[in-house]
Image (cartoon, rainbow, N blue to C red; front, side):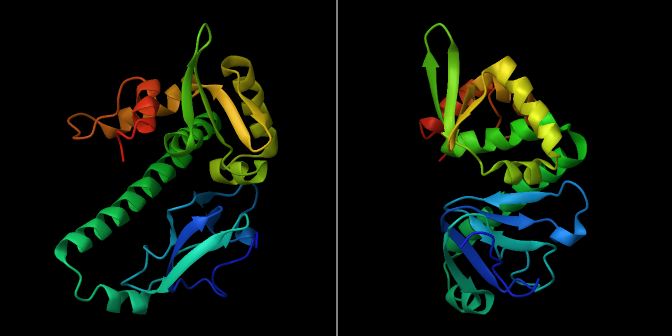
Length: 231
């Protein structure tokens, strides 16, 4: 069911994998977030929770909940310990790599919230969604356009980018005017160039000498993702 907490208290005791639907981590609690909040999303085939406190069992600040009807799979931390007690090194390495990717994603999100204006935070959310769930195509005479499922309802987007409803209205109006942004039911469509500013910031944040360098143009990133280059 939508808007149901995973656990009866703040203590996280399981790994939870999203099979279908959309879930969230609320950065604190609703009563501890005056004004615009902060929220992270977990779409299908992503861990919703459990990786932050698997071995320490320390509190993982925030609460985890469903945002839509969702199908979840879970395993307790104690059961997981038993499952991997004799796991091959290759399996453990893949597991730790997944945890690192989760942590790096969180770090990127926190940096965006702390350092960038709301419109770039909006673009960054849509860029991450477009890489995994978007379809990019060239429209002759118009350019490259992205079509993808919207990353949740308006309230979800406001919480993720930590903005007010008024600010989101201004962002949407500006991007509709400059990049053809439009929403039709559960889908959004926009010129791929709408995402370039956020993409540039991420490239700058990566620094020099990185092993996995982002392409200069966001369109190349999206076409590469669509062809399976980053699987």
